[in-house]
Length: 232
Length: 267
Ligand SMILES: [Zn+2]
Image (cartoon, rainbow over all chains, first blue to last red; front, side, top):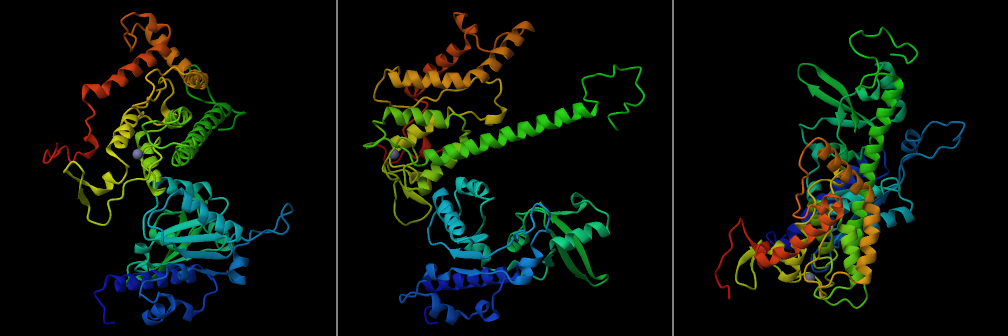
C-alpha cells in the first residue's frame, strides 16, 4: 500500500467496505445461500479481483446474486387454500448491482426494474454513489408490485450498522411465527409497536409492510429480553 | 352500536342531526374518505407521469432552441404543467438535468457543464454563483423563461384546488405575439372542457358569496366579468404577460445569492 493518500486508493477501500456490507446484509436476511468465504474477503483480494489495471474499481464486476435456501422458501410460502392450492413463495432470488452512473433519474430506475423483471429476480438492490432524483424516488413506488427495488448509497454501507453495539439484534418472524405471536398475546397486529420501513435497520433487513421483527436486547439487570415491532 | 338497535333517543336533539349516527352514515363517510384518498393518489400519479413526460421534451422534430419552440410543444407543456406545484416543477428540472437536458422544457439543448471545480463558480457576467444553479440551464435566457413559468404555478396541492379557478400557464418570448392560432384555440377549448367542473365549483362559491352579501373576490371595472368568470382568468393572464417589462424579472434574478448580487464586472 504505497499510495495510501491517493484518491483512487481511498475509493477502492470505500467500495471494498460497501461490498462487504452488501454481502453481510444479504447473508443476514434470513437464509440466502452465501458462503462465508464469499463475504469476508481481504482488501488485497478485493483489489486483485475487482480493480482495473490502473487501480480503479470496476463497478461492473461487483454485481452478485443470491438464491434463497429451501428453508427460507418454505418459511415465506403462504398457506395453501382451496383457491390457491400451490402458492408461490414471497421471496426469491436477489440481484445486487453497484451502478456507476453519477446521477439517477427515472430512466435508470426503469432500466434496472426491467432487468430485475425479465431475469425473474424477486428483489433488486441498486447501490449508487449519487442520490436518486425526486421523480426517480417517487417512481420506485409505481414498480412496487412488479418487483421489489431497494436503493442504497455506497455511503450508507461503509459501516454495517447492525454491528454497532448499541443496535440490538433484529430477527424477522416467519408468517407462522407472527400468527403464533398474535394468538399467544391475543393481539391484533395494529396493536404492536411499530418500526418504519425507512428505519435503517428495517432497510438493512429489507422489511416489507406487515412483517414483524423480534428485537432482542441484553440488559445487565433483566438479562435478555425480546420485544416485537410491526413494519409500517 | 348495532344498526338494528338505535338506542334511546335524546330529547334535546333531533335524531337526524348533521353528524353521522347510523352505521349506514358512517359507512358513507368512510367511503367518501376513501374516494378522496383515491383521487389524491391518482392526481399524484398523474403529476409524476407528467414530470417524466416533460423531462424528455421538446418532442417536435427539428427543434433547435427555446427561441422558436414548436406550437405543439408549447401546447403540451402548458397542458401537462397545469397541475404542478412549484416543488413538482423543481423535480422536473432536476429530472431533465439527469437526462442531460437544459432545465427549461421547451429547450432541446444540453445543460451547461462548467467542468470540475468547487461549489462556486464565475458566471459569464463575472458574478460568483452556485455551480449547481448555473448547470441547470444551457443559458441565462432559459433560466429566465423557466422561472417565468414557475412563478405562475399554484402553491395549493392539486387535490385541494376545488373551487379555485384553474390557472392557465403563459409561456414567455413566443415568436408569434398573436396567441390565437388555430391550435391554440383548439387547445384552449379542450382545456376549458375538462376544467368546466372546477370552474362550476368556483362559480357556485362566488354565487354563494354574493347571496351572503359578500363582495365578489375579483372586482372588475366593467362588472361584466362577474357573470363569466372565465374571462377574469384571461384578464389575469394579460397582466402576467406584462410583468417582465416592469423589471420584476431581471436577467440575473436566478443568480442572486442570499438576495445579494455582485455588480462586479457587469457590462
Ligand atoms: Zn436552454
